[in-house]
Image (cartoon, rainbow, N blue to C red; front, top):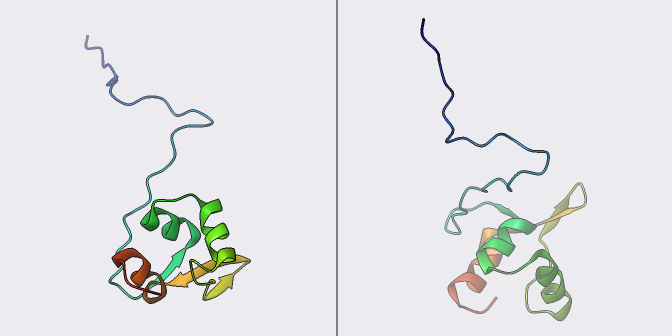
Length: 85
């Protein structure tokens, strides 16, 4: 008789498990960037993005989809690469 044992390497899922990893964003590809994408590229929080938009440090969103802002990668690229927007 054989006994099968599950691998202990995978922790069981919980209601509030770890956050899912977002795939990396390529700023050189023409695409729309979400608020989370822009925050990740600039290494700041979502709130900081909103504050910087209000202060004029980051351009306003290029549009909204279902009330969620997005920026084109060409709009954010100068901020990431160190150029002026």
